[in-house]
Length: 158
Image 1 (cartoon, rainbow, N blue to C red):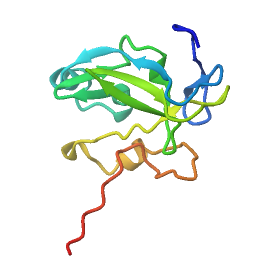
Image 2: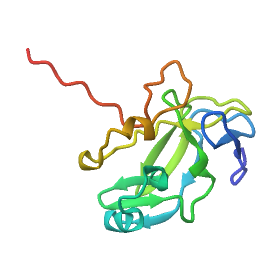
Image 3: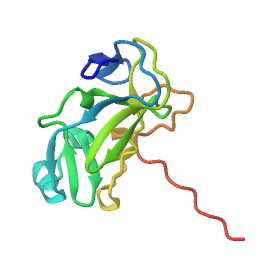
């Protein structure tokens, strides 16, 4: 593939809204796109979104470390349309404050791109609606039913 060659396009998705679909075969290990948008601090995120509805754009937020977030709902690119899956073909990779979406296996032409969002919800922001708001619709046989970060199992003593 030549540098700058478009690897995917946005079109309607059966998973959710719109999704990114491979225009050609994409080999495992290929860096597909950088996730871009406004750079915000946590205070700026809270000022922008406050206690609004969870569907208000927070799923476009990507925490890149410390007090640094990328908000792809403002000045983002097509990477913001790549949907979540519990059995993904891509992964997000944070490198020096930049986020890249890369193929973790070979992706066939026409296949929808996806990665595990592993969303984190602050304990004080939790509500009984989290299961509904962050419900997963990936359809994978490995689906855990949520886009939230998998909870780690407590270690057993002994």
